[in-house]
Amino acid sequence: MIDRKLNFSIRRQCALLGVARNRLDSKVSSERPENLEVMRLLDERYLEKPSHGVLRMQDYLLDKGYEVNEKRVRRLMRKMGLMAIYPKPNLSRLGMASYIYPYLLRNLNNTRSNQVWAIDITYIPMSKGFMYLIAIIDLHSRFLVSWGLSNTLDVESSHRVLREAIKNHGKPQIMNSDQGSQFTCKEWVAYLNKEEISISMDGKGRALDNIFIERLWRSVKYDYVYLNPAQTGDELYRGLTQYFRDYNESSHQGINRKKPVEVYQKVV
Image 1: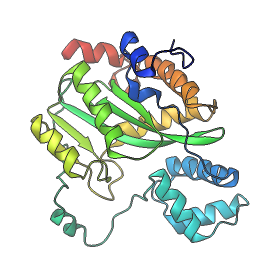
Image 2 (image 1 turned 135 degrees about the vertical axis):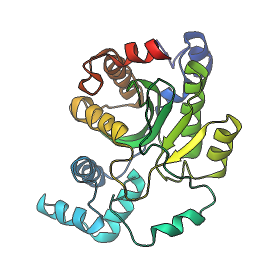
Image 3 (image 1 turned 60 degrees about the horizontal axis):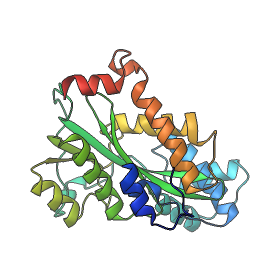
Image 4 (image 1 turned 90 degrees about the vertical axis):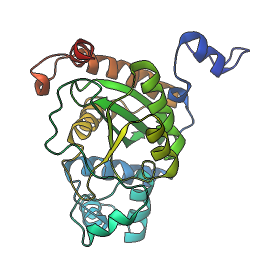
């Protein structure tokens, strides 16, 4: 229903339709065609082998017929926001970082909606470029609380998705994230503290700390993104809107074949 040819702004149209403006940022980031293909392969491999770092990814690309040097693989993985998940030495030093918080979910009895939310960002390949998808899910119900698209890995995009989630669904008791730069910064931490939301962060190198949102990424990519590579940001937005509506309204084995939207609304 958004029409960019009308004589009044997209922001005004979004306001009238009750649509979040941050979901309609249709400017697609791009790279050279060969790099886009390499990034698509890296993305698919990372879903299967998140412990693979630059050198193992380089070997994988070589097996696929792409002679890509180590420097290029590292640059593209950083641009995609991919970091190998494996235990690293001297992890205790992480505690000195001003904005890194402990993981609060271990042995937590998660019994209700809005007790714990998890946020993450993933790379979305497109026909002629890529975007980033930010999503927040309620861990008790698996309900997708809010999501948005961005053409950069900036801090503000994650903040917009969180503010929209709180506006529409109230506040969680705990917000869990990884230790990415978007979540270990002054602005993110200050906002959560102001809202009196407890901050939890995955342990660096721990593959299972945010497993439920990782499963969401696998589902959306294998069931939709890879099968329907979008041409534009608007096309991607429309497709994801339908996909996430179906996701929230379909039964999930992880919650005893119930629907996330029903579990979420029943307890919240």
